[in-house]
Length: 162
Image (cartoon, rainbow, N blue to C red):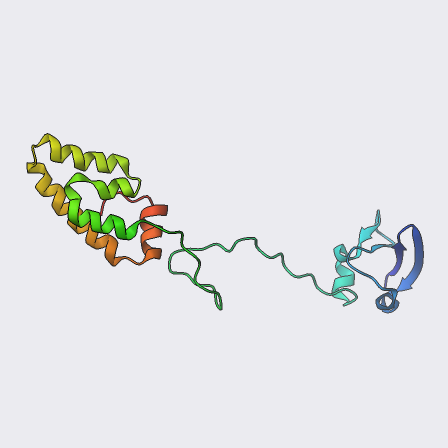
């Protein structure tokens, strides 16, 4: 068994047998030294002290933010908050004004919105029939998705079509 020296500030005490260490008021930041160590170390860094039960086992660090993925729930945790999206506005405008691509502009998909608008305008409205059908389909898809599904698929995944 190792015999440990304990440093309280600038005062060195010891040596102590392993069985005597619990009565010495050791804390994790207390400096200790034993034969074979090159330098003084914090008590919570000495595996032998933790393993022998002189110090409690350290807890793993708490993550600052829990990773989230679509549909995953941590046991006992509330559903992660999803930032507000324009899902309803984009869905309604897709159904009502789909040929103009306004629902795409609301979602931040400027390129896709310009494609829909230019096809409608440059074909004198004839291409607008197809764009309107696309807008209706997309509007229905947006409105039938949950807020979380919409967020992960269209906001995070940056999906532009259907």
